[in-house]
Image (tube, rainbow, N blue to C red; front, side, top):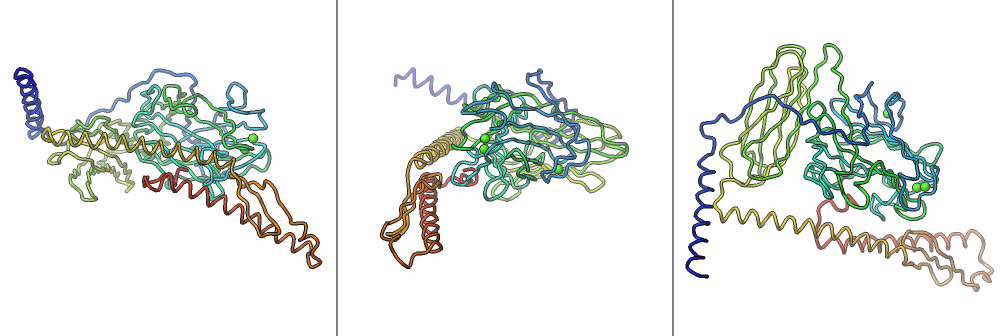
Length: 480
Ligand SMILES: [Ca+2]
Ligand SMILES: [Ca+2]
Ligand SMILES: [Ca+2]
């Protein structure tokens, strides 16, 4: 390096150090640690297709009986232009979707018609059997061709092990959503499934009624009759063949004030996309019936230890208020924190929202570079996870072509990777045996078939373990 170049590098480096110092020096010593202002939700532009997420007209009981959903408008998928893969007709796969909400849950109801109901999870990925996939773009930033940090994708299925709702992407992390209410039942006619689902608002943050006018949404009805995910019907693109929130439809959150004398409280947390943010903003909606004080507690924890906490009270008058509560947590280092914001009213009701906060502001240059390296390492790990999932899917597809043989020397059963019986071979000498009767023959066939099916299932489980075990990917089993 020439002397001039070295000088230039030195000057740039010192400038960066000075800048970092300025930032640290600008830490809000004199500023108050929190403030409360008016919250104004951005008004996204209208998008087609558009539908209404109704306010629940009456209490929703999540049980697979949709009688309380009467009067809520449906989105119907039953047309060839909505279908992909080897879709035949509406009897093969069709269905409807309805959405509504109350102060605690977003509810979804799907009713499908399907000539053959089939799901064999965990032998196949959960999205490859008969199921519904849903995707949300809470902030409606409509990212093109990839998900943004607020975006979510989930699959709901009636699996052999029971109803299951799994999240593949979202700020709350991946895995089964155990806080959701699931009422999934087979239909008495039409071969399909009724899916009645309640998802707590905390699982959908930063989405919240009154704090967002609408959200991006789409869904897909997946069909497995002969082959996993052989066809699907979709409201819009954006889930299948590439993640693309810019293609989603729009759900307008219908709002009517609560009945006279009833209060309403919605709280959410924002997800700062960049780590150089010193302020955390919590949008809050309160419909109050009298003068009151809301008790607010905001906390940040690292390694399960509280590192910052702020308790405060907000006075509100009767009526509807959309507020933005801003917290500037002081005295904390750069790092990754788990946080909660809890808002309690006089009736004793408390709404708690969880969030993650990654902060990179005051550290010396070297430490900031280290943090950057950690971020890159995390991104690389995520690539490995996605690759692992792809490989597991490939391995599964190969196994469909494979066959497993089991049984003694007299009766042998051949089963394929889908656990289907391909053939049974019986030794002619066995049939000549005078002691053989129909009951014994049935027992021998049954034993051979179940042994071959067990072999196939074990092989699939082993293949999955080999592909994922070495990487120790948390939650992947829950998704597959
Ligand atoms: Ca119900
Ligand atoms: Ca079908
Ligand atoms: Ca099916």
